[in-house]
Length: 136
Image (tube, rainbow, N blue to C red):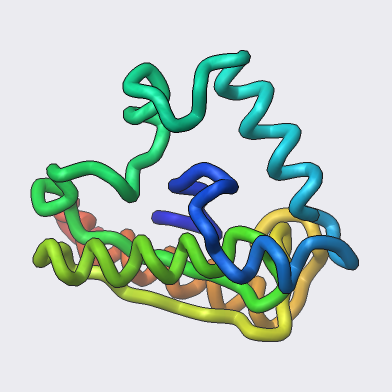
């Protein structure tokens, strides 16, 4: 379950980092802070940081089926969309949901909205399909 995933560095040239730079809970400056602290001074373009970016993996084809969502008001929107496209191109079964009016955090901290309910039910249904426990 990939809920508005962060999968690439902020220098990845994703338009949503500009379009959604501010005005919502997760902003571009906050993402810069997260990445800079996560990498701890390691060159984001160097070999030591390469494993920090799942979208760049050559092994996406070995991943299990996934459910992935993005939201319209989120700096991470476009990298989530790019991950969906790369997973599909690698032959991974992906169920993709986009919530254009929501922002990062809607699935856990924004309250009970219709998008929140839809995403939770979508995730529950996704898990149920892989549940091999006997009924009863």
